[in-house]
Length: 208
Ligand code: B1M
Image 1 (tube, protein in one colour):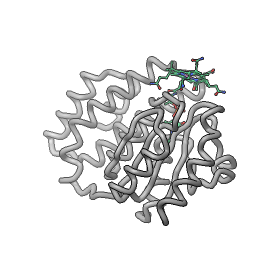
Image 2 (cartoon, rainbow, N blue to C red):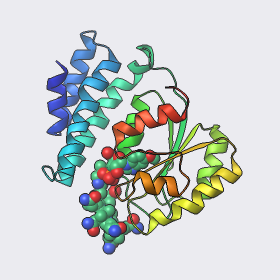
Image 3 (tube, rainbow, N blue to C red):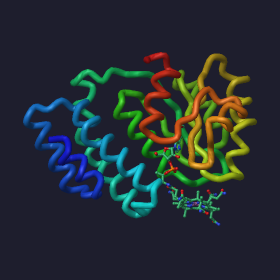
Image 4 (cartoon, rainbow, N blue to C red):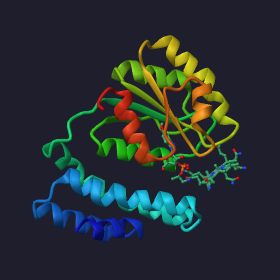
């Protein structure tokens, strides 16, 4: 059942994925299970294939779009089927960097997992992130960096965040980053992909 939806996400068939999601929802399937077994499982395969050069970026974007559209169908049902608020994550791509495909995937999946996500977009100044995190009383700040130049901004940014907001957790991600680098710049956690970002955010928000 979910295998079929998973395949539609992998091949990036937005219309059929939406239709199928509506169909199984109307048949009474649980929204959380559809999300995990179909959408997230599909994007997991996409992430792996992209890493192994078996899929190219336009295909990844088609899959992400199919997931986003199906997520919109699922969203109103997630809270009803028990996905309570896991906490608030303020997320953005670091200043100087406009890459957002991976960050958007992380945002979408966090939302799907029950987090309130405040996505500030790309090229975000740390001051704006701090302001939003204070306003939203965020549990976690998520910073994405895709360039070897902009990843260097993480250390001073995290330092400033920690000085301004006591107790806040910061998670980082993006293809040039490693766990070692994240530790060095003072992040509370690093996730190499969107799936692991969900588990990390849960851990940092004290929900796991
Ligand atoms: Co750019 N770019 N790009 N680019 N681009 C890279 C990153 C690059 C590796 C390409 C290359 O040269 N091989 C290279 C960086 C080299 C380096 O820094 N050493 C590069 C460069 C150089 C540039 C420009 C400087 C090019 C130029 O103008 N001369 C320029 C920079 C602009 C800027 O930011 N100021 C630039 C521009 C662009 C486009 C605008 C054309 C476009 C971005 C479109 C967009 O994002 N809306 C683009 C793209 C698409 C890429 C590549 C091809 C793909 C990135 C991507 O979307 N991957 C990339 C090469 C590559 O990665 N093969 C490249 C798919 C995505 C699903 O993966 O983003 O890794 P990823 O996200 C993953 C994980 O990393 C993780 O989860 C995601 C999902 O699993 N993750 C997180 C990400 N954020 C996370 C946050 C978390 C947790 C996990 O917690 C908060």
